[in-house]
Length: 86
Image 1 (cartoon, rainbow, N blue to C red):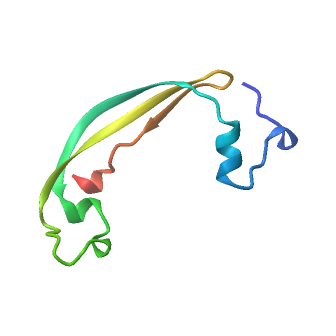
Image 2 (image 1 turned 60 degrees about the horizontal axis):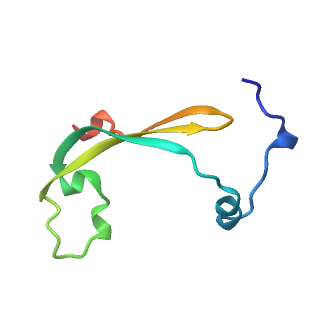
């Protein structure tokens, strides 16, 4: 696949421009597993109200997404966790 030249890449100045030119793509979502742990492991605890128990156990699905771009080909986005969460 040939790399686009700098002059052929559209430069956006805001998200409205991005979404206005966006086109639908075929995609699939895959649940690749589940990880369990304390809330404080997954989130910035300073953003929670004082009465929230940061030690509460919760489960979180690990997802991956594949997109089929009509011109650029297949794209895979793996949203898994690093080993520091295990």
